Figure 1 (cartoon, rainbow, N blue to C red):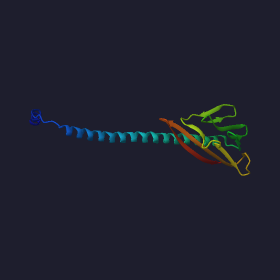
Figure 2 (tube, rainbow, N blue to C red):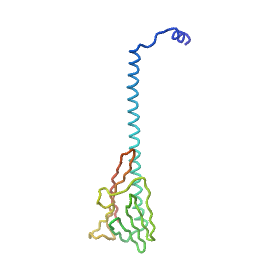
Figure 3 (cartoon, helix red, strand yellow):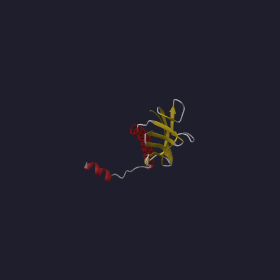
Figure 4 (cartoon, one colour):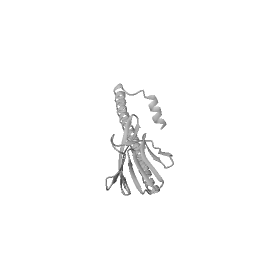
Length: 171
């Protein structure tokens, strides 16, 4: 090892200008490729993270609707202009989407909003988030189908990411 170091110190041979330019060119191309891969990886990571967050919040909203159906055990469900009303005797719960959140209005007047990082709204403007389908076509029934159609939105780095959810619950 000492012989090699001594020989390098004694030798005045260095890199020529052509060799230096070539090595810098190769180094810059490799650096650009590495930057591109890292940048793509971070973008993909953020996109997947947001999609998972939207799915988790969609699961939370749907499980809240199901939990209210089981908790109230409604004798009838009524279609309202802005949501649905679950009724069992004196117990009434209203589920509606307002200001980008799911709200549960209890019979005592308390409002329980479900807090999410996403904005909740209809899939298309002018459509209902909740729809009750009854056999007779009336807006209040003891058995039928609840259709939930919502869109969750989150923004990250100036881009809005959406997830449309459609689900049906029989009662």
